[in-house]
Length: 637
Image 1: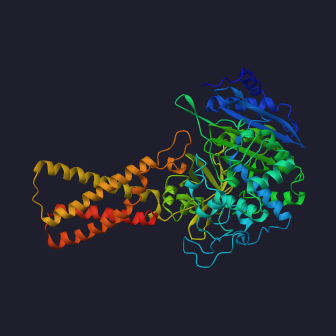
Image 2: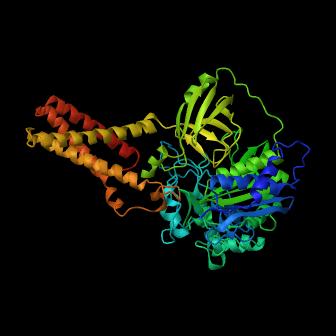
Image 3: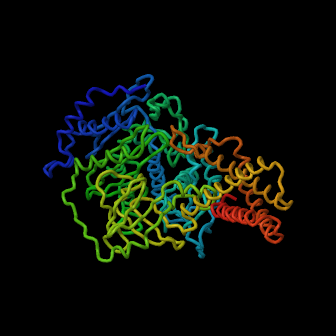
């Protein structure tokens, strides 16, 4: 069904175009007399161009709500218009800010300490040792401060976040035990966004308060603030479910309806309205407004971690962003269907919230950038001059970098070769950095620190990608650090995507070609003259090739991207029933590879096969042994 956008869209857009985005300094920062025209002009156009079915926005300034509005339909079939006061959207990781609020309330009560080992608050233990790298000494304990700045050092599991049925989403106490990730970095040394860390924090709220997480938040945050249309219930209770916006994805010319998504509640399970989120923003901008003390809010707004003074880092729970020379504290939120952004300018007493379904994080980041350009235009554009010998400095940084937000110890580690990778090249006095499919040009501003020369759209969900700094991670790898809670480490050559995928492709093509060759040869000759040992060796290679092809087909099928949810189906818990059998294929292939190695020695020793046959078989054995090593390195066996 096609959305019937209001006729006012065209009029509003034309009016907005008549207003210069780069307004003069005469504009008063908090003069929002044109805010509706401004938001309409941008958002209605984006909704039309990017097929966004529904959205909601609120703006607060100087202690009051100055704008809130709903766009599109909460339900396309019923043509139910979005109401900013009652229509609820899934706000994803913005939920984390509520979790951090609960933690700070308990800190104020003296029940929690930000710098105490979290094991003191848990009824199970987070191990002290690291499970990756060669880090020898015992790392310091993980604290709440580490969890709130995304520096606990946990690995990350992509397939443990989203589910499409309540039966598949574990209760919080079970989730934090069964999905406990390994520690791969010393706490407090590497920033890597962690959903599990926030889920664990929510469980600490339960343990210390003696209340279920959802009940605690309801009694201590939602009720005091009168956020009557906010909840962490999954699915929503009947009183709220009738107000939940239906999520859609535009596919092949039609809007396809998505199911309710189940997320670990403290990390991303909240549903709310633009009006309620305006109340939440005001609570922070007004020094806590009864749910927190003013001193607590000020402490949370301070920077608590960054890898380099030139980089934006983490406040307590809030992500830092610098835009048009203004300090911004924000948090994005994405489920597979909804995207949201909450932005605070504490020094200006301003907050902006937006949520919508059917697109990605770029819509809210671009809207906020346009907002800043319109109301807080940058007046001084600095001209950067590269220092001498930049090219020599840059050469050591060339290569690919993998997210540190990944699995290091499970078969999921292989995903790091397909998602979130950064590639760095050198060009004259610049670094060319390919991130999210966009090539950025960076200029060195001091040794190892580079400034993005790009102007315009943001291309990172976790930070502005404004500055990058090259450091060394605890395992001795060059580490690319940037604004926000993400870092990337440069792998050794044998862990690169090029080496890994070329090895896999070479093995598949060689075995597939051998199967065809032997098949055609058998059809032509019908009766083989090969010696018995060669027949046995060939039989083992044929079985190996068939299993390898089955494994490739299984990977392709389970890795298929769902068009509505934009994730591999396996990450949504949609695993084929037969996948439980194919999980053993890598182990069988290793066994067969050892058999091929034995036959290779026998064939050369006895010389029972032709020279061409022995060379061919040796090549097959070599690629299979290399593949066996890859299976082990990437934890497939």
